[in-house]
Image (cartoon, rainbow, N blue to C red):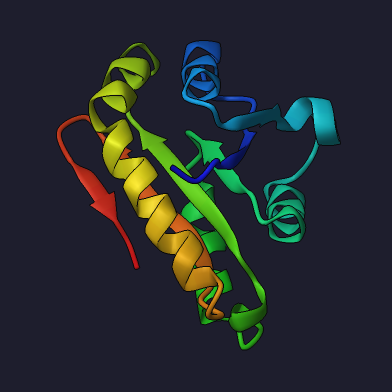
Length: 134
């Protein structure tokens, strides 16, 4: 399994980031790295530079991911997004249910990124379904 470098947004429950860490992923808090006031765009810029996956509950990142994919510079960008679109109490249980799919998609995305594709991972987690965007 490939290890994800996760930049965890301030709105993600600690239980979720701890779970990813327990699975061997490199989990870093955005507030520790960039401060409490870091903008979404600044976090994405850092994710691109670090080839990291942003883990968030903020749906504004969907727009930033789409913009990156539409950009003429998309071939030079490799970052990922895991967007948790559900209530906080359900987040950990839902992530545990689908972690194998998330890790599989990351592994597939890592391979594609080596060939110049944009997103390492673009997963939207809802209460009852999982959306994987390519």
